[in-house]
Each structure stands twice: as C-alpha cells, then as structure tokens.
Length: 277
Ligand code: ADP
Ligand code: MG
Image (cartoon, rainbow, N blue to C red; front, side, top):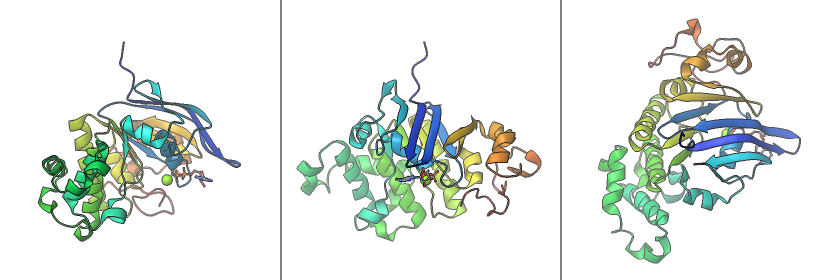
C-alpha cells in the first residue's frame, strides 16, 4: 500500500458572512514536491493556507497530515507537527544579526527559548551557520538583518522557517515586493531545498513566469473553487484556466511550454508576467 500523502486536503470550506471564500477544495501534496496555488486576488488562497496552518477553523472538510486530521487544531500544535510557514524577520528582529535570527528559531524549535535565552549567543551557532550555508548566506552571518537587501532578508526568512525542521512549508506570497530576478532566485533556491531535504512546499506567487518555471504542479483557484490542477504544461494547455483565470485564452502566446527566462505571460489588461497584481 502507498504511504499516505504528506498533505491531503479534502472538501475544505470556509465562508465569511455571505462570501464563500473556499468552496470544496481538495488536493494532495507529496514529499519532495513544490506545489503552487494560483488565482486572482480574493480567490481564497490565503484562506486555504490559514486553514492548513490552524489560524482559521474550516467550516467543513479535512486536512490530513500524514493521514492525521489536523483541521481545527491550534496553530502551535500544527506547527509542532511539522507544518512551517515563513515569518517576516525584517519586521521583528531587524536589529539582530542574520545568524542570531536563525539561532533563535532553533532555540524556539527546541523549546529552549526562555530557559536559555541569556546564553543564546553561543547556542546552536554552528547549526545556524550550516542552515545559512544551505541558503547561500553564510558570508552575511554576522551582519544585522537591517543591513541586508530585501531579497536576502526573504532568504533569511526561509532559513528561519527551515530551522523548525518542517515536513511541510507554507509560503503565502514569499516573493511579495521582490524584483523579478530575486523572485526567480528565491524560488529556485526553494525548489533545490525541497528536493534535497525532501520536504513539501505549498506556495502562492503572483508572477506566472516564476510559477511556471519552478513549480512541480500548479492548482488554479477561482472564487474559492479549484478549477484545475496539474503540471505546468497541463495548466498552460487547460482551456478552462485560460478562460476563467486569464480572460481570453492568452496564458502563453503561441502556447509553447517554455520554462526559460523571458517567457512572458500576459493577462489582458494586466501587467506583463503578473496575473493578479
Ligand atoms: P487570496 O489570498 O486568494 O487573495 P483570500 O483568501 O484572502 O484570497 O480571500 C478570499 C475571500 O474571502 C475574499 O473575498 C476576502 O475578501 C474574504 N476574506 C478573507 N479573509 C476574510 C476575513 N477574515 N473576514 C471576512 N472576509 C474575508
Ligand atoms: Mg492572499
């Protein structure tokens, strides 16, 4: 028998007043898989993420983590079970150094934070440096986070998330505010870590170029409903996606399945390479 999926979402629903924000969403995510959820603003992506990480209780449906239903459990409990998400390092701990931010995440993961905080400067430094090496930031370890470029801060956030040794990592718009080149770099790095560490990542992203270049599979959400899921190639070729999500079938000009840089996608009336910005 096959092992249960890392994440299996079934019949998930949530409404806010009269708005059916998430309407019968179901999908699976396996270890070592980078899965994108795309859709216009208000499609219900963040609401899905918030139900998976426990910030919102679903009205109905199941969220199975390795076969265990975690729907409605508290965020901290779900986090302890191995569901991580990226936090904004810049907003909170900008005065700390890069390596201290990762050390603090390691301490927090091991519940040592309050017992050992005065000695934190020495604790887990080597391990934190190892994580920074994995994300390519070892040379910035002793710099205050506030001195980093925005793209590097986002990379620290990824290292901080990894310090919690997640099995599943949820990244809701991880590249928000980043330039196209930085977006591609962060998602290429994420993809490499997904494969090396065999974790699962579910992410949202506005740039279609980034999504199609890096995701293993793509889900398309519109008005709370999943209208398609499949490989980038299948999603490009999906007439319903083109019609409902992109308006007039111009997901990719000429329909070629290019994954390289410069493969511009256009939403009619929208910014090049951005479908819902
Ligand atoms: P997305 O992340 O795809 O942009 P959201 O999940 O944030 O979409 O929102 C889906 C729908 O649910 C939208 O219509 C939004 O206005 C509504 N919504 C989201 N969160 C709340 C909330 N806390 N209270 C009321 N309405 C909400
Ligand atoms: Mg959102």
